[in-house]
Length: 185
Ligand SMILES: Cc1cc2nc3c(=O)[nH]c(=O)nc-3n(C[C@H](O)[C@H](O)[C@H](O)COP(=O)(O)O)c2cc1C
Image 1 (tube, rainbow, N blue to C red):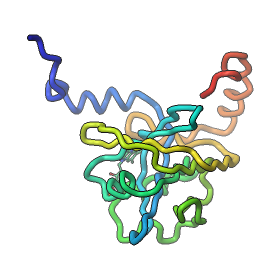
Image 2: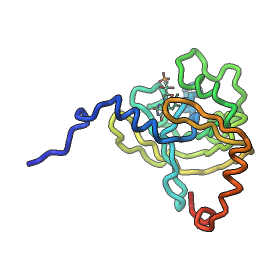
Image 3: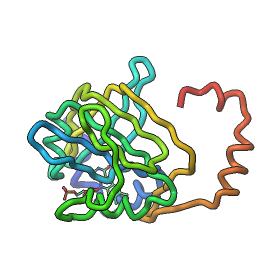
Image 4: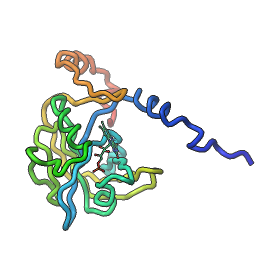
């Protein structure tokens, strides 16, 4: 029987480079559980999943400190970083005694910290956990939303991008197509 190519057949560096060609926004996923300190982790493997019911998903590495909190805790918040929040993306990706030190937060659902200045907060209850190889896919049921002003921080090819305001204005002014306006994403 012919077996599909094993993952080991794929060059991991090439895989990383190919994935890096896909531009994303940047989020910090925050959570807290009973008996744990608040935790946060920079994540770009985040996407919307369903409108009805409203679901999103995040992929979290099995080795991450946050993995047990996300897969067993009551829920999490997705903080969509603004263009000027690149330092936070670094803080929440590096080891440190307290990633929240000096970071302005307020308390959301389940007491989960919400980062001030984020351009959106998406507050979720844990809906399900799926196997994602060396990551877990944590599906969240959206319960609360806050949308702020500002432009998103972008990430591609291993670099953070902060497009000038006029580029966003031009792009959003051009986004007048009916199919774009009526699309659910
Ligand atoms: C731009 C960017 C995107 C990242 N995306 C993810 C991701 O989607 N999932 C993940 O598990 N780790 C991701 N990471 C890595 C984690 O942020 C990092 O390994 C984690 O904060 C380490 O935390 P820990 O030492 O507490 O486990 C990303 C890092 C950066 C800088």
